[in-house]
Image (tube, rainbow, N blue to C red; front, top):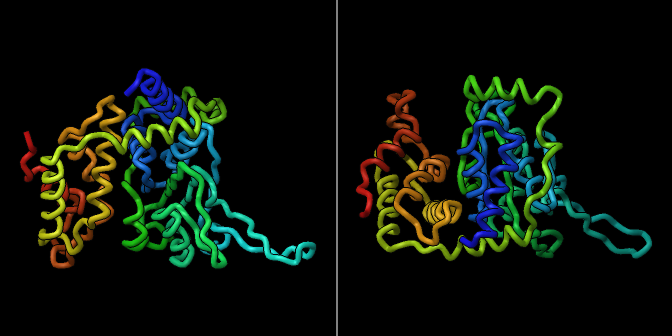
Length: 315
C-alpha cells in the first residue's frame, strides 16, 4: 500500500470514528465490506448506532447516498424506480429510485414484505436493475448497508436465505461500554456527530482501493484452509444448511480487504479466521434435530467457532 493510500484509509477510519465511539471493530468491518465490493447487514436492537455507522461511512467520501426506510407498505417501485408517461414526448420515461446511489442505507430491511425485499436481489448480486425490458447499470462503487431488528421484535419479516447470501457479512453493534457511553453523554449533547463530518476521499480513491484489494495475494494453503472450514459446515450434524460457494468466495474477498487495510499485499491465516464467523453466520441454518438442545452456548455462531477452532491453521 502506498503512503498516499495508507493516509486515505487512516482518514476514513478516523472520520467514521468521530461519529461512532468505541466501535473500532464495526468500523473496520464496514470498511472491509466496502473495499471487498460486498454489502453489509447490521443486526441489533434499536438505538445502538446502526444507522449512524452507515451515514458516517457515506459522509466520509464524496459519493451519492440514499436512505430507504423499509415499511410494510413499501413497494418494489419505491426502491427501483418507475416509468412515467411524458405527454410532451408521448413516451414513458424512467425515473430512477433510491437504489441508484453509491451507498444505499436499507433501514430496518426486515420490516418490509418479501416482495419488496426481493427487489434488491439483482442489484446486490449484479450491480444492475432490469426494468421495462432494459438493463440499467448501478453507479460504482455500490454498497448496500442494511439494518434489521432482531427477528423476535414485532412487525418483522425474516430475510430468506437467498437475500442473506447477498450480504458479505453480518455484524452486531452491541451496547457500548460504561466509559464509552459516558463519553457519548459528554460529547453528544445536542450533536449527533454527523454534521461535522467532511469527505476525506472520493469515488476514484475507493475504486482504486477496490482494484488493489482484488490483487492481494492468497496462498494455495489458505484456499485449502478456507475450504476445510466450509466443508465441515456442510457435514456438521448441528447445521442443516452449510456455507455456499458464494460464501467461500466472500470470505476470500473479505480476507483480502482486511490484509489491505493492514498494509499487506498478501493474506495471512488470521485474515480468514477473524472474519469467518461474520461472513458465515448468516449463511448457515441450525439443524432442527439439535434445536431442542440449543442454548445460548449452542447458537450457529458458537457452532462456527467450534468448527473454526478445530481446523488446523496452515503454517
